[in-house]
Image 1 (cartoon, rainbow, N blue to C red):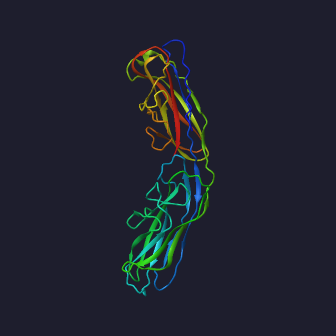
Image 2: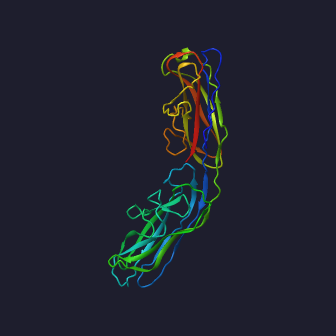
Image 3: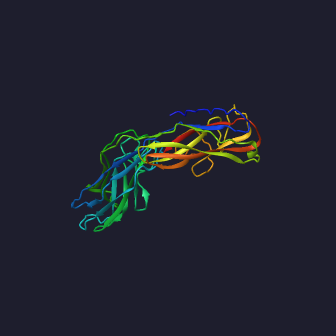
Length: 353
């Protein structure tokens, strides 16, 4: 979405009255997607002579999937879900062990997030951690296997937990999460490296419908800020301020979103200070403009970008429904003030993360 910049009309009359300031509203909007993605963990148990039976306790069910367009690659988009895996080796096994539980991986490692598997749905990956050693195991993909938990002896057992969390790996455009097998667990003898029996336990991601992406809109795309009248003697000292004027930027979102904002100096886009450059047709000298955020802190200018982590991007807060962002603008003395008009143009870019 391009930035639309609108200029401020100059003031006429006495030179002691210093300008008016306006902020146009190019807005980058992000889809706010709330998804319930239930899952199942399937367990199979057997009593074959050469197998360590296993089972899975719990269900893989991602209840809240939060997607925003500007969420960075690799960031979590769900809560953490944990499953417990238990294996017991029969005392009549032919091999004395030790035995290990090995998970055959069905998913590839993501090309953009090296510690997560691709889920089969574009843009969505899954990061898996083994509680034994607190290590990520989703950095190894198909056709390899991962070893989980501690070793077992004949007649012994082992329990470990795997934690699953969905992460963003790219642009998410699908409306359906396809069912995918993730892990099939076998037991094997660490001494002979032979695998026993059919899978002891399996974990899969079920097919889940994704609702259509929701969006936010700016209810005040054009913000005009006529500053209060000012006099040169109010700005006698460098750094002195006057004419502080409040204005609001309005949003309307379908559902919760973490809102961030970046202000850009339209006259000098490379400006990274907190003082707005005056337009070329301003006639006053020794004065500039400063914008403050809802916490009354000066806002430094940054590039016109909605990317998460953009320089001088700041968090507005979390919104649900309507939201009015309270801002203010003021004159700032930068030197010997001479009478004239002051005009400034800035753009604001919203980011939803």
